[in-house]
Image (cartoon, rainbow, N blue to C red; front, side, top):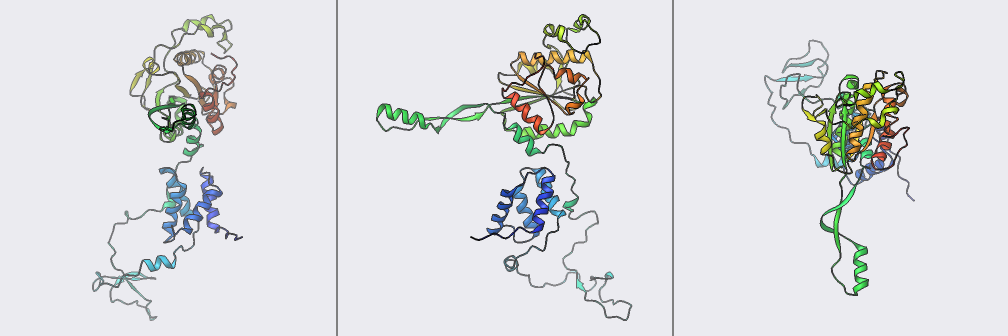
Length: 397
């Protein structure tokens, strides 16, 4: 049995750096690199090896930049084979376009006029003619990939995609293109006649997602992270339709503000005594853009929701500032009831950890609706709720 040679040290360093940046590389990825090298790819130069790693390991534009930046930070030995050198013979010398009044490159003293020798008595070092060099300004030229700044978020694009791809509602739609083996055998067993196979439409994911994002205010520090999350869901979530609406704190005011005066204990944060009397939110507005400049009626957005649509709300619920607002709790409850009345499965993602929810509006909202922190585990549990797996809450709506 032939034992393969161990991988060079720079490969381990490269994989370690990439795993720290959120790319879950493993043994299979290293084996793929070994097989590609054995097939003759990436052997011409160090740049070709870097591009081979990009092609094998990167799944998006952002990951390609991460792989290139990590590759530039590891110490890679001279990577050039004899085959590559034979395939690229040295071109014959040509006339020096800068000869005569051109420049000669002195390795020690820099460029000097042609024909001029150093003033010292020592023999001049070997000089090389600068041929074919365009005189470019200092601001142009190639960039150093090790200096590429790639944002690092708590969740990578791949982790987000893996979580939200589990939100599926497969339905057979379209022309019949797939073989139904059971139906074909059943028809042959009943008739005894060999006939054309039974075809059925292909399965397609018809799951739809409504994302309601709290914007500005205490959510300002999380803007880039939330934008990264939504972009990853859009590009790799593989859902049938994704609709995003933005609001600030709440989409609108509940018409049942008078219920706050009926609370028996004004110092108690719970709405339990009047919870069943809160009507679904019928007014208010969402925004189509994150800058909150393109308003859209909240009722119209709810009317467009079809049966089976999942809704996720991304907001800190007041936990970032550690405050409690009974009016905001009432308005949020009305919004959640409107989504439930439209037939949505509703869940909440909070960018703050669960330890920060106690004593805030978010803590009371979590009593009525499944709320999870915006982590990898929290996303998986949220997707489970949206898929129809119930999660116990203290006082469900």
